[in-house]
Length: 469
Image (cartoon, rainbow, N blue to C red):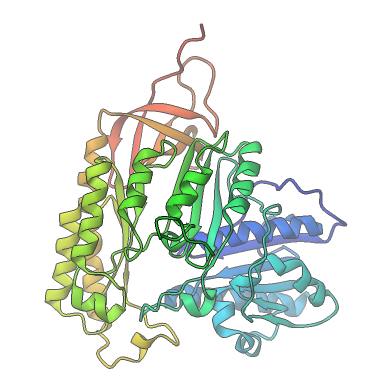
């Protein structure tokens, strides 16, 4: 889990100055997108980005509860801020996101210095909730809400790449996962609203958009309409076709996919639509069917392999990334070995790994066959080593190739370099100045000759611009 803070200024003109703010974000892309929206709301209210969390007038932690260590880190941060508030009563202290939704009022009992506790579905209501705080109330907002449209206030982390939420919530019932309890049921946005947001981003100079959803390929299940062919009128495939021609956008990505809903029709659309990048993030979680049934994932290893085979048939160079959990309750050594076999057989470009962590209120947390911590550590170390080896083997194919890289920003370790990503999502570093006296800047699409490959990143030499005629 990483902590981030929001980036460049939003376009809204702020109201009366209220002081400084700081947002720390834990967890997934959905949380990062929520933080961008909340930062935009704060700036529209008159707050300005502070220097750090130790001096800001309003501190907001956007939290993640998918792993216990991330949750405990939040409490550590809150302890420091609670101590600070005891000497500075004017500090406004907010906990948003999944821990807030999970804990609700109990957070106030544990950290009575908090002013506002708000679940993910209330991100767009931040101004109204803070208005109540300003009247002296302690506010808890965790009731289930219909998520309001809000496409004007995001304060984007990047000036080049943007997140766009297309479906909120989750209707799955994976036995290890707390997300449905903290993010609510699925709510798909209308395609017209999504396209309008993307057009606005393109008009402001953004070059790439990542469409987001907890299970993004379930998009549209809650929207009305049936086609003449008898299928749902709104699917992720239809959405990609509906937004593909937004002028100014060069690249479109989407995440996270669920194998239960991933279709051949979606794969064909990705192969046919030039702006859709050749990268698929499809968690498999386990390489054993018995474990998958215990997880209530709703697919088999064979089904997962068929999806990958179809992708490789239509898009041979596509990158495949995934998530996996090891040491799930009752997982035998033989079952764990099948996960290792699947990682090697598929040849993943990247896999996010985690040892099973019991989460409050989930069925698996109460099962009696929990595995010892020593087994979790051993399996996690082994799977991480395998993931890195396989990723290095996949990276080798880039050596000597010419790759188009979208420059996203300056390499923080080398100010003479830019960094960006290939269409297959490989992080790539290259010299900002190609030698012609016209340095590249973030937002440029740059052809890079790959000269160094690493398991999860590349370096290369920019090939320069075409001569002006």
